[in-house]
Structure formats: C-alpha cells, structure tokens
Image (cartoon, rainbow, N blue to C red):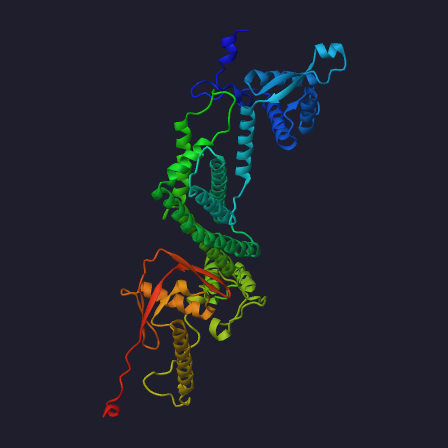
Length: 525
C-alpha cells in the first residue's frame, strides 16, 4: 500500500468534479433498493444509535419495507455498489467469532459514511418541509429574547476571555437563539404560503370555513401581537451591540466555536471563512427584525390574509342566505319565457315558477269567443280588431258616475317626533361617550387605553375613519365639537382591548376642541 495514497484522500463534496456519492439516487435501475438501504441506516442511526449493521439485518429491513423476495446475494451486491460510490464503509466483526474458521474469516459490518447520512437527513427534511403547512411559533419569541438577554449579560462581564468557559457558553447560547429564530421564520413563511393557497382554493363548506376563520384570526392576531411586542426589543438589542462594538466580540466568539474539534486539519475551514459565516448569521437576524423588513412585512401580509379570510367568510355567509329579491326572480322568469318556442313549454315553466298547475284563462271579453276549430286561412286572434271598446275616463274633468277619491291625509307629526327623540338620544349618547373618552383632557392617546367598551371602540373607529377621509383630518361631532387626528401617518401600532376581541391599529392621537358657548346679551347687562 502506498503511504502517500493513504494519506491524500480527496474530499467527498468537491466543487467541480463528479460526485459518485449521489449515484444511488439517479443512475441505476435499483434506486428503490438503494434508497431503502440508506433509509435503514438513517433510522437506525436516529432511533437506536446503531451505526453498524450486518448483511442479514439490512436484508430483513428491505424485506419488511417492500420486497419480501429480497435475497442475501442481492443485498451483498447492492452493498458493494454503495461501498464503491462512497455511501458505506465496511469493517470486520471478529467479536462474534465462535470458531477458528469464523475468526480467520470474520463477518463484515456495514456503516454509512457521514456524508451519506447528511444526504439522507437533507432528503428527509425536504420531505417534511413539503408536507408541512407551517406554524406561527408564538412561544419562540420569548425564548429568543431570553437567549439574547443571557448573551448580553455575558458580553458585559468584566475581563471576558473568548477561550474560557464563558466564551463557549455564549457561542452555544447564540446557536440556540439562531436555531430558534431560523425555525420560527421558516415556519411562519410556510404558514403564510399555506394561507395564500387556501384563499385560492374552491368554495369550501360554510360551517367548516367559519370555524377555520375563527381559529386563524385568533392564531394570527396572537402571533402578530407577540411579534409587535418583541420585534422592537430584539432590534434595539442587536443595534446596541453594533454601536457599542459588542458585535465584533460576539462574532469572534461564535466563529471560534462554530465547528467542533477535528482530529486532523484536513477539511477544516479557514478562520476567515468561519468568521464570515458567524457575521452572516448576525446580519441575517438583524435584517429580519429591522424596521420595515421581514418582520414588519410578514405582519402586514399576515393581517392582510386574515382580512381576506374574514371577507370570504362574510361572502360565503351572504351567499348561503336565501335570496328574497323578487324583482330579480321575475326578471329571470321573463327572460326564460321570452326564450321559449311553444306555449306548452311556457305553461310548464309558469306552473313551476308559481306552483300553479291550473291553465291560464283569459276573459271572453278580452280574447273573443272561444273556438276549438283551427283554420290556417283565418288570421290570428291577435291580428283582428278589438271586440271590446275600452272607455277611458277624461282627465280634464271629474266623472259624475264615480265619487272623487282623494288620498288620505297622513299625519307626519308622530313620525317626526319619534325621529327627533331618536336624534336627541343619539346626541346625548355620543356626548357622554366623547366626554368619557376625553375625561382626562382634550388629548386622547389610543396607546394609553387599557380597555374600552364595544360602543366606545365603534365611536373611535367612526371618528378615525372620518378624519382620514377629511382634508384637514377633522371630525365634527354631534355636539358641535371638533376632533382632530394629529398623526394620520403613524407607523407604530397598538391594541384596543374590548370584550369581544382585540383591534390592531396605529397608535393615533386625537385632540378635541369644544365650541365656545355664547351667553345672551341680556344676561350680560
């Protein structure tokens, strides 16, 4: 054996050369058997921590999976191919020797290479990701914030040594925080894509969709509330590390412990490459939580999809209600009657529409004398002159035979009085609610409201909508006071808690200006 040949082993994953380790996936007619064998190694590796298998154990696993007639010779041939491609390695098992002959010819044990396990792990993760629908991991945000707080406390320790135990603890805490954030971001994006696909599907069952709407509204609003609460904290914490120079120290510590110790220097990445990867991790998290970037974009898109779900549920509920627009039904019936070609079809359509099976009869004075004889030479009844003379009452003078019919006089006083009472009641109610909202002064900050009633929330939304549609962002209340929206372009959001739910809206501020009361001149004299 050549010593230099044994020491100079080429890496499995090269940049430009052919990779034989992937041959079992595409370049053989026995791909199904190869995939089953490699999945067996992966399952034993994960579940039983068993890394070395005999030929008989692999054969039994393939038989149990899909091929009951799988023989030992076929198994040995498949394993030989996998060994040639670099997917498995072999070692001699002399521990089971029961005789001198078996000791001299020990059985072979097969073990999957780390690269083959990595390929199968990747394929399994992709399968899980394609089948998953994503989730909003609301509890990951507090865990991420707690990890960052622990890292911040450790970075501010006096005399911190990256090579000491504290440096390793900081690196491990960062890896946990990064994995939590990466999983949360990936699952949230997958769940948003699932919501978009659900909105494009065919019309679902009304009751099922209503239940889905109720669940998804609470689910998304809860995550959006937590994201609003923690995004600013995490963004400010990461920005503080950058401004104080702690980012460079953290990146150095992460890069130092990014890879586990290796027995040889072969295949290890350069320190510059490790530091670049650590810096990329920090920048990725900072960019995701930056203002107006991924976190804010996800919150806006998620709330927009929730609004679509609510609108679609309303549309489904409206379409499920019975349509009582008789004018539309009569118009449709008239169009069908116009399109019929014979009287019998029209009669059947009429009978079905009005649930009346009796034939339609016309008076003799209108249609003429009935006759069963049919003479094609005679003109139609509708072409003959009218047999009845219709007398029309003159419009220029009254007809003496009939008494004059006058419309009854309607007394509107009761209706007007009821309308006045309703207006006064509405005015008094709005006055009391506005006085309650502005009880502390003429300024109102929505973020300072811990809890509002349903009626107060409806009044606030009415005022804000009217201010947004006004050129001066003002609203004139029924008590003649003027309410002005001071920050119509506010980008910071807050929550209005009411008994029936939570309203997510910008943190608007309102000011109220009451109309001056003019006393009569007689009172001043």
